[in-house]
Image 1: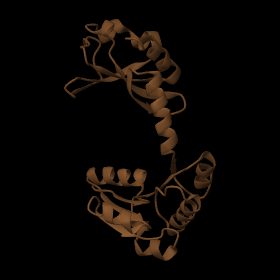
Image 2: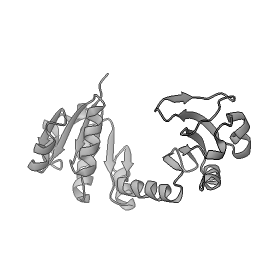
Image 3: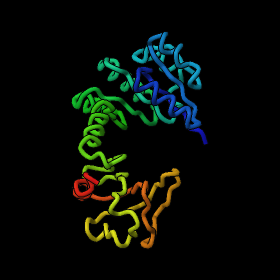
Image 4: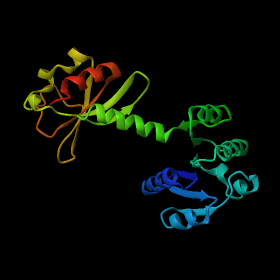
Length: 221
């Protein structure tokens, strides 16, 4: 079943998010106060509207309370962002996601009713720093303050070894939950006798401190 999303603010973050949701076969409307942005993306979304999200009448006319998720992706106007979240909350929007410009801004958004607050600039910076420090890590997904999933290159010294002989679970308390192959095929929950090949990427889950130890050991591989 298709979900309905509304994205308020069609700057770089909002427009890319809206297009990705639309390409995922969802109904997506984009909203921006600037006519040029709406015109630019009107053919990439289900619909696009020019509207001031800080005006209650505009929000009501768009029927946003009927959408599954409304994302407030307003760029650099903190006041407009806060007022928009307040209006959406008052209208009974079931799930509100809001982009925060700073930690304080994020705290305010949470207190006034945003169900989820995101920090795209901060998160992008953290991901880049992580990749620069650990170039053998292809991707990193933070699950909590203590646990993550990482996609790690298989070191040359491990090629030909089996999951059992690597003994990652016993040595580092980490689990290999999948292996992505060079042809993009994926082996989920590989068995202990699976033999690693050159080009395999290991999808590993576990404590951040244990993943860091593993990354340091394989850093120069």
